[in-house]
Amino acid sequence: MRIDILTVVPELLESPLSHSIVGRAVRKGLVEINVHNLREFGIGPRHNVDDYQYGGDAGMVMMVEPVYRMISKLKSERDYDAVIYMSPDGERLDQSISNELSLLRNIIILCGHYKGIDHRIREHLVTREISVGDYVVSGGEIPAALLADSLVRLIPGALTDETSALSDSFQDGLLSPPVYTRPVDFNGWKVPEVLLSGNPVLIHEWQDNQALERTKLLRPELLNKNF
Image 1 (tube, rainbow, N blue to C red):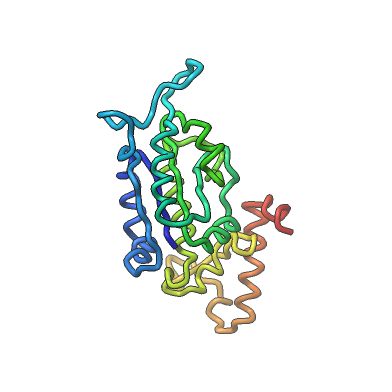
Image 2: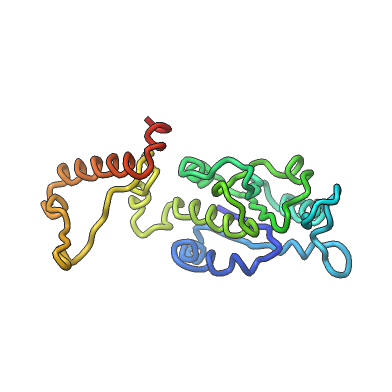
């Protein structure tokens, strides 16, 4: 998989994409992630990428030309399966979307900034819009890092134990069951006996019941959505 991220603040993406699972996957050659500074295609001697918006409202808007020029350059080099804009207007990111996108070969992720992007970019260049929640942040960089992380960990070989992703929250529409490690007893807080039993049938039954009960308690809307 190749992920190209377009941004006016590339520094915001340096750490999230260089460490942990994503960083290891990059170093192993499982994914190629390229962060592009839109100012390389900025307008004029100052490489401007934003301008005042028509209509007189406050807030600067990212211009269409730098985005068009950069996407055109990338598309001249390879085919892309999706051009994704991180936007509060988009469809809410969930595990099913991450599963779907993780199967693609080449994607572009566009990070908005300032007051947003010229709407013509969304009309003519973007193929999909994705939101990470019903709130507004300063730009699309952190949402883009979230999306990239959720995709990369699904690539075969990215996780040390590939079966780990199968038990993540939301993979089966439920929250994950509780997990424990050593010691068995800490301050009188004990690991459930069933997890020490060595009986996989009983353990899986307990995990399924716990996942269902936790979902009922913490995220009951998921049950209405998935069952």
